Amino acid sequence: MKRKNEKTVNTLMIPVSGSSFEEVQFGSYLLMATVASLISLIIGYIIGILTKNQTQTSLYTMPITLLLTSVPAIKLFQEDLSAILDYTYTGVLTNFANSIYTETGYQWNLTDISVLFGWFIIALVIFIYAYKKNGLDS
Image 1 (cartoon, rainbow, N blue to C red):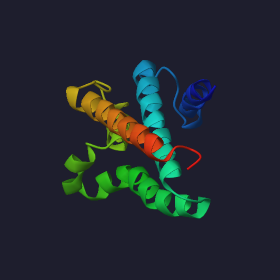
Image 2 (image 1 turned 180 degrees about the vertical axis):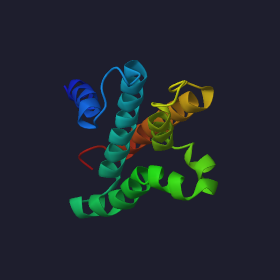
Image 3 (image 1 turned 30 degrees about the vertical axis):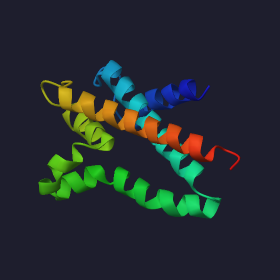
């Protein structure tokens, strides 16, 4: 059920942002947004499993969320960090968003695919480890 809701929200974000479906490479957008949403969800699950209570969860989630959601602004104002931030999944999303309205549009490349896949696999492995170690009832 979450995946269906996630796709619905990702699809609704296009008109809400003021764009039209013709302007956006819809397949690439949907794939990238879905994978990024799953990575964010898994990171949230990891933090939830590893923390003892809701206060700790909020405390640990805030800096991670702040860092990952600040990538577009950091890339804009700190160009020397831009190359490093390209290796975050939110950096890939930022590159996608910045290239949507260029003449060539967004072009998939091995780096972006590797970054998304790498973040997904690493987050999934950490989640599985954390779940086996702590479980939900620990």
